[in-house]
Length: 281
Ligand SMILES: [Zn+2]
Image (cartoon, rainbow, N blue to C red; front, side, top):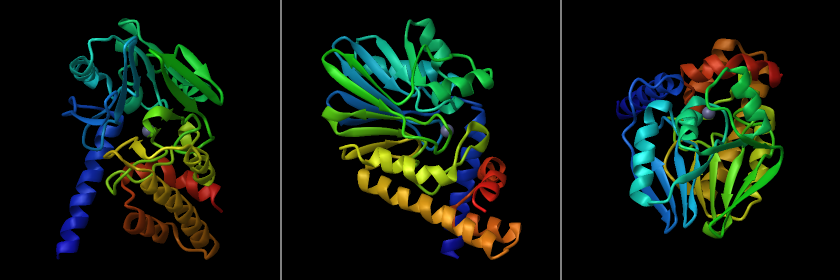
């Protein structure tokens, strides 16, 4: 009984996450988590994505900026942390729950940085707030004597995912190539160039960096160890699907497995199932 109750709570949360993933009816309630004296996470439950803020004496660097409806609240939280202006926002990928605040921030003079692929996805999706600066594999922002590193390691959740590394703070902002908690299982956005097959290798690239603390795309701030466990789950996921295809299991049987073992919700089936079945034969 208890187990069923827990399962249904998880699925209600997952449904709530799905609803809010593409559209935000109202602004999320935010809370701020301190990682280091100069590094903070503007967090909320599940959706929209986490925002990471690095404070320097020449301005603030943000990673992701939630939905447009959250923008004023994000700016207000940053103001509480520093009287310095926001100078750059780095989007970990193109999805609106991570980049929806771009246009409003650009009106304040903020420069938006993404991978080249993420910008192409934004153009294709006719999104507002296109990035001003892009890179292919690796870039730095040096501001106020501090160093922010950005890396593209390949396809995962989309084909434009990057991680943002704060070496002095030993912290990684992972974007949606690492989401933490059963309510936000991994979502392979095939229409955005995602790949279940490439995902593990992409995470291996990110895990080579030297850090202790991870800000997942969604979920609470956690450790590198949890990210490594998630990496293993991406391998299990694709092996499970592949094996069931080889064993000629029905689509319904695969759906049931994904619900029970990987907590997939409707959004995951809509965005990921056909692509995964084609990719993992
Ligand atoms: Zn996303």
